[in-house]
Image (tube, rainbow, N blue to C red; front, side, top):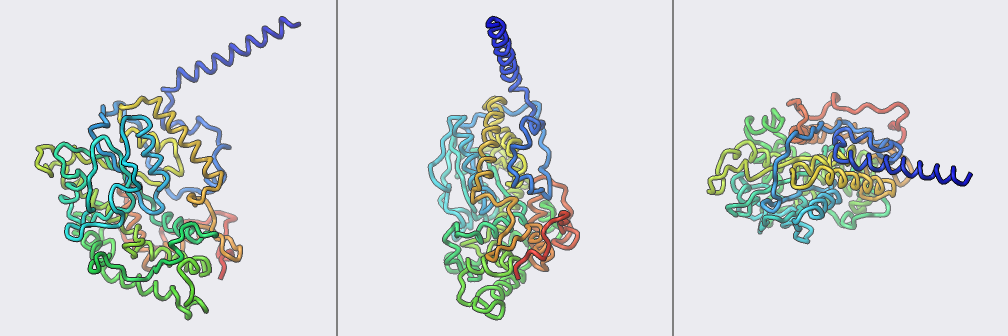
Length: 457
């Protein structure tokens, strides 16, 4: 009897050893695209299962042959904006530094955020070096594209740069921004002192509209190249945003007693649709302390212009075309939320090519997916996807209702609709070059979802 028990244990150990060996042998043959079957669906946090994406990620097929890349010959720059991936940008940076000889500069940003040289209108004091990886939030790319190309290459003759541009659908970006900054207790103290309707000027003389409009009013051949038939915004749109902001902010005609409220009080106590409207205006028109929705669109257009117009041009006098020295990959935070594993693989393929093995990429992607799901399950305050908006009175507002409000908004619906087309074009979606907003874009409510009855009035 004892002998049989020992034999059974030996057979069981042998079987487990074979299973483990089979897994190790096949690790490097796991399909990047088919990896969704490699984990149990129950491990996906329920918050993300509730967050049905409006648009699926553009499919990615791993090339048969990835390029041989020497990372030490490149600068790596990860650009993000408010609510497009602060924590994600640090994770992507660490993926590279932990798997290569590259180092990062140890700073929060490569250069000053939301700032530029007064005369060139490019970022100021750019000094990036090969074999380094940098993270940059909210850069001001308001200069001409040839000057911008030289700044990105740090005026060095042998420099090459890979840019990873983290963007987001503007409607989900706006709702995430409102959800995050209206939360209780307050997460970021600046909302207690912000002046969302103030007319901000860089260097006391440059307004945000005058910096953006040269890009947004460009000719059809440029705007058509980023998915638009009409200007992204018109000059009068900024005045209309300001007028609506003042109608909502510290206006006792709008809400009794609100003339003494700060910005945070408005986000907490206004009707949620009005709070979202105010927060979105601030995210469009406050150039120094906000404005990232329009800054993101501006920068997408500038990087696309470099790709389209300077690909064959020797932009720094080295005999090497800019297209071989400036490579940009645009990725959406919404995609990383849907598929953290697949998007990590896509990022690593672009950044490192064959510099690390397929098996190592798989291990990095698996670890990131697990860590992201743990953050979501743990209630990380930075993660708002799939969360309903809760008002001070305890009412729950479905994010779909808020998105429908934005899409139906006479001004914000058109502006964000145009930004959405620019983002979609950069991400590789087929783009309808029509106007913005409108009922055709309204997201259907799920059966049983929260309706207008759930909104605090």
